[in-house]
Image (cartoon, rainbow, N blue to C red; front, side, top):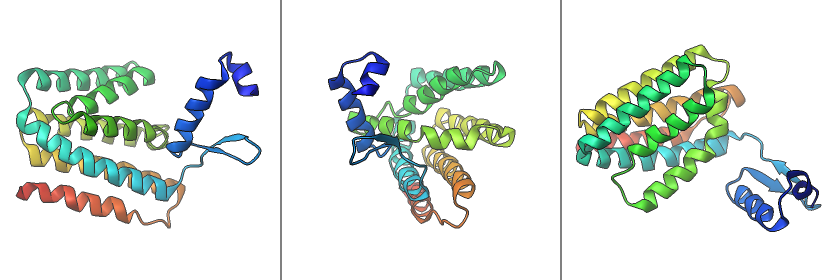
Length: 202
């Protein structure tokens, strides 16, 4: 396999990595065994962010109710690390702190949820890149969203944290869809947000 030779790795782990990318919809293996990166797709984005809203709104709702002082401090620390990375123009560090921020607020739920959330978080990277790169407005909105989510989480406002998270993801999804296919209506995302809002009545 030419790619294995170019990367200096054996074929078996490379095949497994490609299989996983194909399973996640991030790569396609064509009939001639040529591997191509999957195009950005509004229907995939709509489904992915609807799943993220459903899972993470419920997760942060539960986690907020039972968060310890250590977990609240961890969320604040990760948020500050994100802001520091932005000031330093360090995108790699921001990405790392951003991942820690979201995953830290999933710490109080079953690992099955955590595994699924982690996988969907990684799958969303290319869409997150489209949303943020080259837009100071979107960076500012993202920072505002994360601050509000953290504030609600730290204050123990479970339903409010879930709503803010759902709105944050919906805003990202709708902005990216507007960029790649303005005619597409993200119906699943809209429905997932409605479900997240219903947590205020739990």
